[in-house]
Image 1 (cartoon, helix red, strand yellow):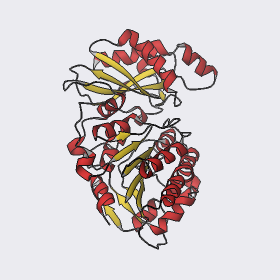
Image 2 (image 1 turned 180 degrees about the horizontal axis):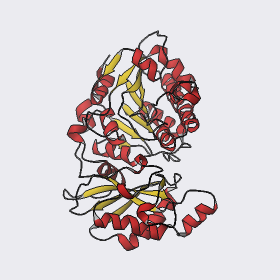
Image 3 (image 1 turned 60 degrees about the vertical axis):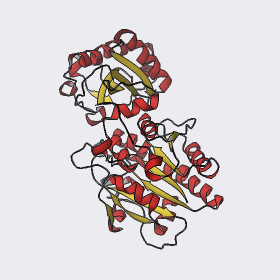
Image 4 (image 1 turned 60 degrees about the horizontal axis):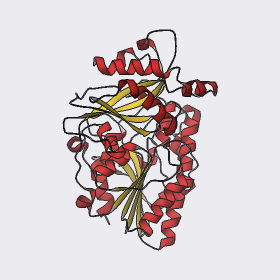
Length: 401
């Protein structure tokens, strides 16, 4: 038996008037999921433990089979694992987004945050911006590391774990009340803005009508993580396919391999086909038992507040990834189980994460089932299965027959 988990980050949503009361998942044209759903178990799973913030960090730990209340030590430390940023036990890691602020003639604290991803800036351009700022700001106490696109990492030697606000939670708002209370972190954000707002890359971006990447934004603080080996727990050789450092970091911490796919970038136009083909190869040729495919695009479109693009991302996921994985595994002749789900909802109406249960679809090629449902939020509730603790889902997926 082979196992593939396909996670559409933030794919779940709320009904929208402009979609006739349907969610983007209900509205999207998903021929492959429509084919699979009647042959599958569908239900809901609560991925966010009570009292914890609904982040992709806690949610994906849950989906991976790790209780966040036991294993979670912060988001950025997981990303630090992925990009190879060394951490001592006394270090604290922070996510360092490069965001878009207004450039009004007002103090820094009175600017408004427009875009948490700086128009999904390329890693190449972001690396230049990061390094140019760090020529002034980096030292033995504060070390910076390039991640992917707008997502980067700062390590504070003997630092403090501080509660900071994710930038995607305050889009279109004035930033003053959300700035760090720590004087040095606040200074670094302010100084990054002064350096970046007239940087040649941003001058060029603005001339092209693109959002400038004009300020650092710190959040997601945490200490060095320690995860138990995935293979030791589940006795399966696993691999991760993702463009996002958070997921790659979870894989590193869990002792799983990361399979890198050219053109996978965490955006709407990521290399869906490449991810699908890499997963099929890993399972049918390279000796892996389990592959976790993570697609960031639905979450990014939710943060952008674009129902049209979120629907498009779901349709791409269905046609350009799920279909290819299914057809490839069908051709192999091996029995397999496929689990499809989001990590959390990212509703268009609020443009950020919420803690509600998410729908899952579990297909087993060795079983014959016949139901009338489709895969969406509403039908998943009527499916009758509820998994109260997200971290129990992995064992259910891998061991249930």
